[in-house]
Image 1 (cartoon, rainbow, N blue to C red):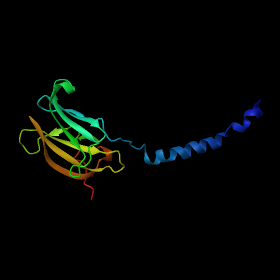
Image 2 (cartoon, rainbow, N blue to C red):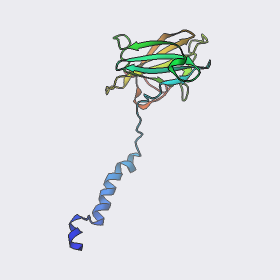
Image 3 (cartoon, rainbow, N blue to C red):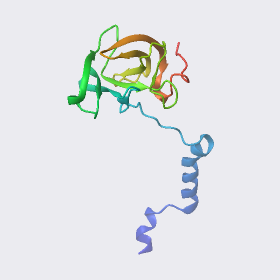
Image 4 (tube, rainbow, N blue to C red):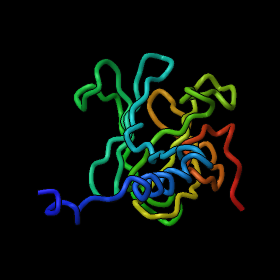
Length: 165
């Protein structure tokens, strides 16, 4: 009976060497931080009690919705549809970028309206993107400025990102 399974076993010294070879990069360099592009960060609460939702409506369009109450299309106050153009880039997917750690909105121009940073993504392998900053007014969203391009692969806040040249 032992001879039947003897061909399928690995000697202990070879098994230990194999485990050490596989674990050597982890021991030397540590466990790599695997981050994904945060496409699920598409909803946020604004300081005045309203909310903002980047709702994907088809393959190349995203609807920016501002509403109040519960997150629902029935509770929207207004919305605008963004789709891919040469000027604005692609809107296949959109997500919010932090200004500082855990801060999704700021009043950058001191006009008492919050600014939000939005990044777009198109399932490509180039993660160097411009960050689009919009001012959220009571009945509209207005383009404020564009920053970047930044490497958005690591999901860092804007104050930690360095422009890619």
